[in-house]
Figure 1 (cartoon, one colour):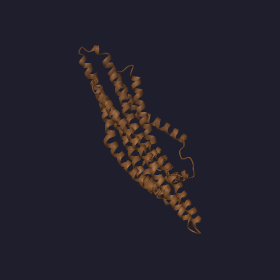
Figure 2 (cartoon, rainbow, N blue to C red):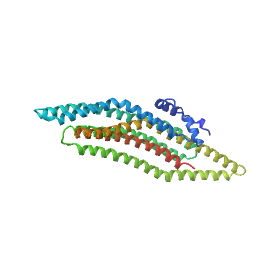
Figure 3 (cartoon, one colour):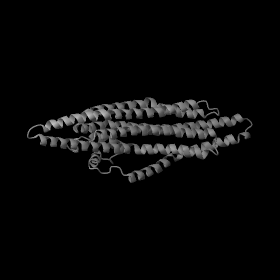
Figure 4 (cartoon, rainbow, N blue to C red):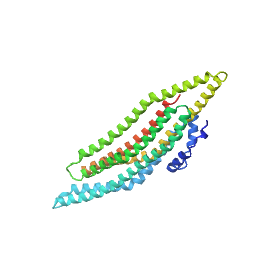
Amino acid sequence: MTVEEIDFGEIQRVLDEILGNGMNFREMAEQGMRGENLLSFRYAAGFLQDVFLEELMAQKQLWIHILILAVAAAVLLHFADVFQNRSVSHISFCMIYMILFLLLMTSFRNSMGIAQEVMEHMQNFMSVLAPAYFLAMTLSSYTVSAGIYYEFILLLISLLRWFTQVFILPCIEIYVLLVLVNHLSKEERLTRFAELAELMVKWSLKAVLAAVMGFHLIQGIISPAADAFRNTAVSQGLEMVPGVGDMSSSVTDMVFGSAMLIKNGIGAAGLVALIALCLIPLAKLAIIMAAYYVLAAVLQPVSDERITDCLSGMGNGVRLLLQAVFTMLVLFLLTIALTTALTGP
């Protein structure tokens, strides 16, 4: 069996739609079979630096508007004594805050769009990677493990798609709305609700990660052992055939070893492709999150506490998006890596 016999057309089509024509999956799988380095950290560092500068320039206008609004709100509140009626300054602050509210919600919707898009890309890629990968696993004699893990990965993709769309992303959006509404007045009445939403998201992501790890732990003990027992029985049965037993056993081992090498090469290429899919979106979310925290720190000495707490809460909301995307990436990476390691020689 050779790597040319496996159809990577669907995998390559998905990668081309997402990343362009800069990544050849078949070549990466062959490099993985030869034990070559598939990931250049120097190239990744330079690439992230370019993304950092590009994202800062793209978000520059938004940060300037936020700074202007925050300073204007601070001026109105600090010089409220100029007005004979203090309600004038309060109404003016509310108007400025509502403009800031719209700006921040627009920015957060863009951030959530980045998270939704990269999650969908990961799920689509895993859907087309699974048939080729588990075909190679089947040909490497791990038929029991291939069947179990293939059903698991399809179930995992479906559950994650439902879980993120129905629960995780709506909870994060609710958290951000609660933070923004909570700081409209000086009396914070929704803090506990916001903390509850944040806690639900964090613990849900940890629970999903623990469940996937538990599955791999249990199946790593059972399935490979069953395949190893069956392979041993087949190999010993061939050796008992008079005359051709040794030759048949050697040919079988060579075929299984070739399929194992192909499976490991596909797994290594899949890991690198997943990282490449998430590299830019994770970098963008990290930059947006850091920018909110920096703005909150810079504006704290001069602006109203409600403005800085609002910006800090927005940073927390983007951090939850970043954590959700990173958790899904880790789930898929662990699934491929542990499956490859547990069904290896």
